[in-house]
Each structure stands twice: as C-alpha cells, then as structure tokens.
Amino acid sequence: MNHGKEEKPMDQAFSQAVTHMTPCYQCGTCASSCPVAKITEHFNPREVIRLSLLGERNEVISGDAIWLCCSCYNCHERCPQKVHIPHVLYMLRNIALREGHLPNIYSEFGSALWSNGRLVNVSRFVENKRPILGLPPLQPIGLEALRRILASKGLDKFQKKEEVQ
Image (cartoon, helix red, strand yellow):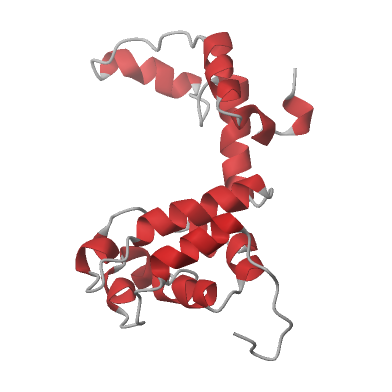
C-alpha cells in the first residue's frame, strides 16, 4: 500500500488490530448507527477503520477519535461483516496508552482519582443536601488501598507530576 508515502513497518499490536478490520468493506453502517457520530464530526468509526487499513498508524494512535467511542455496540450489532469495532478501538487505545497518547481529560481524571479518591470533589453544599434527600453521609475513601489498586494496574503513571507524593 504505497500512497505516495514511504511505507513504515506496522508493529504487531497495530497489525493485529488491522487484521480484525480487514472484513470491513466501508459500507458505512457503523457510522450511521453511531450516536457519537451523529453529534460530532470528530468521530466516525468508518474513518478510523479506513485510516487504519491504509496504514495511517500515527494519525489513528495520536488522534482523539479512538477515545470518543461510547461503547454502545450499535456498530458491532449492525455490521454486516461482524467487525467488532469497539474491541478494535480498545486495542488501538491500548497502543496509544503504551505510547503516551492520552487525552488530557483522562489524565485529569486519573490525577483526581489518585489525589482525592473521586473524579470530582464533592462540595460542602452537596454534602449538606444528602441528609435532606435521604442519602447517607459520604464515607471516607480508603485512599491508600485505592492507590495500591491503581498502581497495580499501572495507572499511577498517568497522574500529574506535581501531585505525586
């Protein structure tokens, strides 16, 4: 596949992801079934597959599109070739993670989880509303246990450097 560019050898993980896509004949069923593609032009599963099949590895891995899939599985359920698009996108995300391509929002979530044990800080206002709504008080977070779990999965490396303790 030489499209005016010098070919680069594909790594094994990317090649495996592409192999899962080869039955795709670009009918567009995935894109027409995708709720995310309906609301943003930044995600089109058909385009991710097309770029991958063309060997545009760096564009696919370093871009934001692979992170926009909401894992609804509409594409997979409707694909006439039974291409498991969400699975392929997970494979591509794993490659992107290994190479340090992570959208900032996920790094921020990881940092918040590492620092506070929650993705979002709970305000005093919300805490005071809980009893009025019949909700129990928030329990303390076992932050050290959570950090051990996150670290055991390698997720400690995605926290912001200034928050490392």
